[in-house]
Amino acid sequence: MKKHKMTKQKAVRYGIFLGLAVLAFFFIMPYFWMLSNSFKIHSRTAQKPCHKYIGRML
Amino acid sequence: MKNKKFVLIILIPIFLHLIIFMIGPIIGGLAISFFDYNPLRSDNHFVGLDNFVRLVQDPVFWQATKNTLFFVVITVALNIVISLGIAQLISMFKSNKTRSLFRMIFFLPCVAPLVASSVVWAKSILPTTNGLANMALRALGLAEVNWLGNPDVLMWSIIVFSIWADIGYNIILFTAGIDGIPGEFYEAADLDGASGWQKFRHITLPLLKRTFTFVTIMTLISHFQAFAQFAVMAVRNGPQNSGLVLTSYIYKTAFETKDMGYASAISLALFMIIMIVSLIQQRANKVEWEY
Image (cartoon, rainbow over all chains, first blue to last red):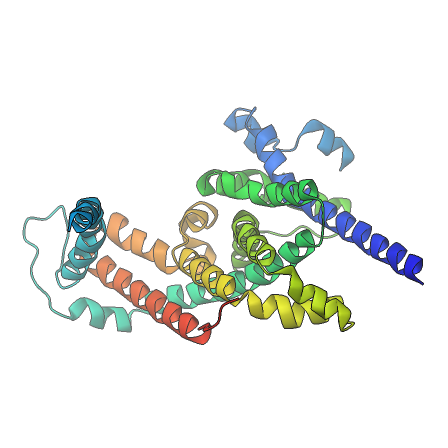
C-alpha cells in the first residue's frame, strides 16, 4: 500500500515536471527568438524574422 | 542623543530626495493642471477647474479609462492566478536545483527591457504574414489572426505579452512566500489525511495573504502605469483607439499636442484611480496575525 502511494507520488511529480517543462519551453521561446533576431540587421528581421531551422520545421 | 543625530544625518538626504524628486513633481503636476499650460508659449493663463470639466466631458478620456480598466483587471487577475499556480507547482519539488531552474526560466523575460521585448513581439512574433504566432497557427492548419491590426484582438495580444513579460517577478515572490510557511502545518494536515488541494486551500492560501496583498497592489500599480507595450504594439493607439490607455493618452496630450495642463489633469485622474484601487485592495486584504 505504502509502495503504491510512493509510486503514485513519483508519477505525479514527474507529471508536474513535464508540464512545467513544456510551459517553460513556450515561455522561453520568444526569448530565443529575440536572441536569434539580435544577430540580424533590421531589414532582414522585417523581411524574414523566422530562423531558418524553425522555418523548416514549420 | 548621539544616536538621534546619526539617524537625522542618514535621513536628511533621503527626505531631500523624496521632496525634490517625488513630492515636488506631484505638487508641480497638480499646479499645472489648473493652467492652460504649453511650454512653447510664454503666456500660460490660469483656467481654474476647466481642465477637469473638459476631462469629464471628453469621450476619448472615458474610452482610455475603459481600456485601462479592462487591461488591468484581466492582466492582473490572470497574472496572479497563473503565477500562484506555477509557484505552487515549483514549490512541490524537493530539489533546490529544479526549483531554481524553473524560477530562473520563468524570470528570464523580466530581465529584458520591456521596450526591447515589445519591439521583438511586434516586429517578429505577432506580424500577420511572417510572425511566429501565425506560422504556428498555419502549421496547425488554423486561420491566421491579425494580432495587432484587429481592434478586437489587439488588447488581448498586449495582455498576453504583458503576462509573459511580468509573471516571473510574481512567481519569485509567491515561491518565497510559500517557502516561508512553516512545514509543521503541512505535517499536521498530512496526519489528518488532507488532500493536496485541501492543503493549498486551507493552509497555503490563507498564510500567503500578506504576500498576496503586496503582489496584487504592486501588480495593479505597475499595470495601471503600463506604457511601453502600448507605445510600441498599438501603433497610433490601434484601430478605433482600441489600444489607447490612460498613459498613452497622457503622453499624446502632453508631448504631441503640447497641452500639458490637460495632460496633468488626466495624470491626476490616473493617480486618484490607482490610489482608490490600492486602498480598497489593502483594506480588503487586511491581515492581523503572525506565525
